[in-house]
Amino acid sequence: MENNTSILQPVELNSVGAEQIQSSGKWAKFIGIIFVALAILTTLLFVSIITNIDKLKEMITEKIGMSDLSYSQIESFGLIALAILYIVFITVFVLNAFFLIRFRNGSENYFLTGNEDELANSFNNLGKYFKISVALGILSTIGTLIAVVITFFTS
Amino acid sequence: MLEKEIILKEETKKEIASTIEWSKYAAYISIFGIAIGLLQIIVGLIKGNASIFASLISFLISSAISLVMSINLLNYSKLMDSGLNNHSSSDLSQALHHLKTYFTIMGVLFIIAISLVFLGLIISIIAFAIS
Image (cartoon, rainbow over all chains, first blue to last red; front, side, top):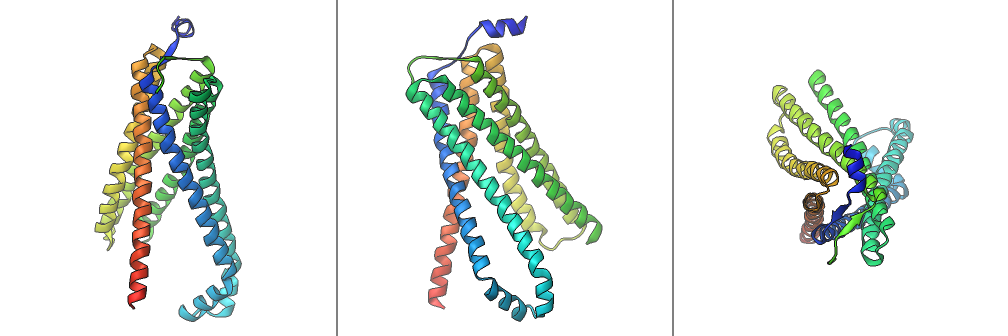
């Protein structure tokens, strides 16, 4: 019964709500641009590590006193770990930026053209952004939980 | 600012409903994360961790921010749900106000973080120049 009423009765968004969406969109776009900048910085950092790998090797072997053999043994593992970390960070930054900027563009296009598909698309991207936040939250919580268990049983 | 009210189509309501669900999950995960962080602090205290005071301060600040953001997400979820089910444009506006607050807090945090990074960079350059 309630569902039938829900279909028949329109849901209205007033001008205050519309303004809140526009304002949210502006902040979302700003955050998206910051994520793009972070992705670029992460790439520059990764490239500078890869290009200066020999200097890094000298520094590690001299300052820590590690032998060339020991360094060679951990080098490939370290590079793989670094590459995985880079891919994870870039994916998170780029996807977040993509969905947040599309959320803003969708809402802005809607208010410019009046095409409601744009508004639906805007909320679709917001939903995807929240899905990524949930996935990251779960990963982060699992990581912290593992750290707690390790601290409790080892130190 | 729009002068007329917008009647939402079913497709838009479906997409909004998806954000209601996922924003709620994001808020719950964040609150659960705070609880796990508290557990980490307690374990640190039991084990006599040397840097526990710094960890505690950092935990209190980050938890307070996470909690405020989670409450805004939960309010968005609750009011948006109520707005769609009860056809209340006032609830929809309030829900969107909480969404705006959530993004504003995040944006301001990013601005503070960027400012701190630049400040650190300037201090490092000055320190390097002096030495």
